[in-house]
Image 1 (spheres, rainbow, N blue to C red):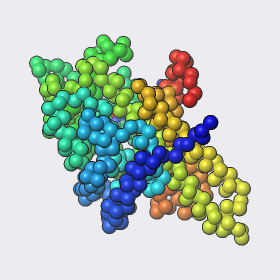
Image 2 (cartoon, protein in one colour; image 1 turned 180 degrees about the vertical axis):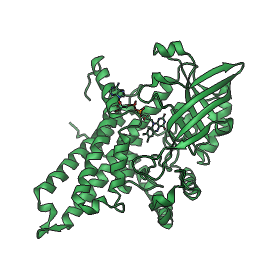
Image 3 (spheres, protein in one colour; image 1 turned 135 degrees about the vertical axis):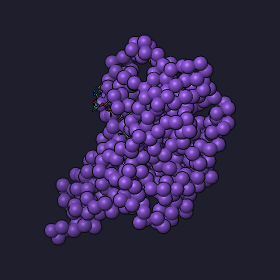
Length: 420
Ligand SMILES: Cc1cc2nc3c(=O)[nH]c(=O)nc-3n(C[C@H](O)[C@H](O)[C@H](O)COP(=O)(O)OP(=O)(O)OC[C@H]3O[C@@H](n4cnc5c(N)ncnc54)[C@H](O)[C@@H]3O)c2cc1C
């Protein structure tokens, strides 16, 4: 029997290598030049928790550079003008990116309260399968702006009273003549405060919604149509964030701004969320590797009581446990990416397993890394606290850890008991 080789195949390795080359030549120097601004959160955000204009401009510059170099739209479907690389490549790229560059680098990897990586368009800030059915004229007008990195989007599903439970949505869209009028409040919307376009989910049929059979419609809404950013929500001790509260007050959109079928937006929402879950899992699987490698190196250098701390079994066991967490995270994510790539429908149970496992494992690995580094582990400079906070944060969006387990259990009990 041939051995199972889960190292990236040569064509994916090539993509990763050229992406690294681009980052090292174009983005790392930019981060270095702007270190004072980007390393200090009190300078990155203004008093209303917004990213300062200079930081927004730097992110836009990085995004546009990435678009030009051919990386921003790697995972954007081909019918939207992207490269259409699939979930397996996405898993490999995310693992490689985050294991090399670590957390907390605002232009490269998430951290510092930023969940969006400017270099790769994701479903929360760029074109994805969620908007595949967008009206052709709207595609012609807006896709070039999104693909060039000039403009960004957001994905507005959650509300103050509807997070895990999508069937509790309160935002309504009412048909008036040949227009739809949207009213409601959206909360926790990543990139919402900076987005030019919003994909918003609203209730259009309360009976279908009550029966959990539909009743939610997806709309594409330009900023000029009047949705507002009510506030930014800073979280996990950050001085600001890119997550906001958006309000829709009698926001009118024409009929052609409906994406897909009226009343059947739920599947569109889940399409986006599945992409997000797998990406978060892979990001965490990569970050775990970064933290483990840092821990190994430090343990071999740091001396206490006359010998390196790597000599102590207490430290060795932490390294071993972090390896177990990292190894299982990466194999799980890669296998699931392969399954997603080769299935007609997303492997929902497996994606939930990846999201729950890799995020929780990553938090454990960062916690151990902080312990191994002692006091140094707590400093802002070494970025372990960025990774720890990010992993902790990731247990909530795109379905909490409990919702992932609920999804897995429901699938198992419905007869989907396949393991691999
Ligand atoms: C940083 C961040 C970014 C986000 N970005 C976006 C975005 O871009 N777009 C968007 O639409 N949303 C976004 N969200 C919202 C996110 O998807 C929700 O926060 C998440 O779904 C949880 O909803 P909630 O916060 O209302 O918690 P709740 O749903 O109120 O859950 C509270 C607790 O109850 C548990 N719980 C709920 N139901 C069950 C159940 N059936 N069984 C067991 N336990 C249960 C949960 O696991 C949790 O522990 C973001 C959130 C965060 C924190």
